[in-house]
Amino acid sequence: MDKTVSTLTEAISEIPDNAQIMIGGFGGSGAPIELIHTLIDRFRATGSPKNVTVINNNAGNGAIGIAAMIKAGMVGKMICSFPRSSNAEAFNEKYLSGEITLDLVPQGTLAERIRAAGAGIPAFYTPSSFGTELAEGKPTEEFDGKMYVRERWLKADFALIKGQKGDTVGNLTYRLAGRNFNPLMAMAANKTIAQVSELGAAGSIDPEQVITPGIFVDAVIEVVDPQQEEVLVRTGVVH
Image (cartoon, rainbow, N blue to C red; front, top):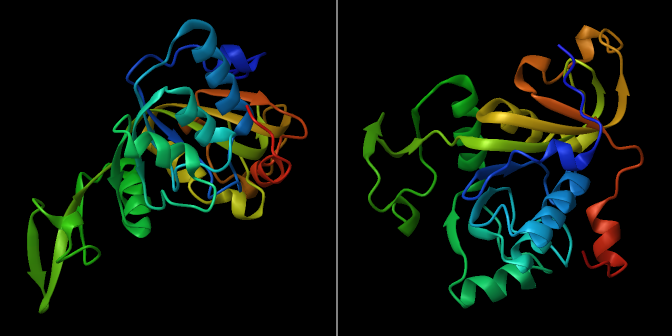
């Protein structure tokens, strides 16, 4: 099945209001900037999608990417582990004014909740957060003399991810640290949309090199020479 789409606008066209969206990347590494900015452009033009929940490692930097989503007013909730980066003014402003809510999740727990959803595991136990406010209201249990907190899987309606190479049936590879959350999120969403720097025919990627099998990808689009978040922030770009 050919999963390629011809435009970024087409790629994100089905995302509705109130959607829960996973966005790949660890800071700027592996962040699908073009998909994010196209979604923002759609919101500014139509007012939709609004009140979305964004799941990412952080809450954006500068005035591009996730930070620009927040600044535009389209995000109602952030689920992340590191909201207060050095350039998180957009999140800080909206959070302090009560316009956005935050679900703070320890980084390892965030990754495992996403992985668990992709693996069909509804819950697991972790020692992280035991005895803190983050564990309030959650079941706990003792194993071998140590206390653990029960955490639920974390699913999403859509995942926006960034790969290095892709093929027409959705198989993906990643570049270096860009692998981070992207493969996990691809497995945990009802619909996964991937942008890739290089798009080839089915079979053009050595099966031994495939990280995300095409069964987890619903749409793929080629974005040659994608933008890098850190460069955009450093040069003061505003989206």
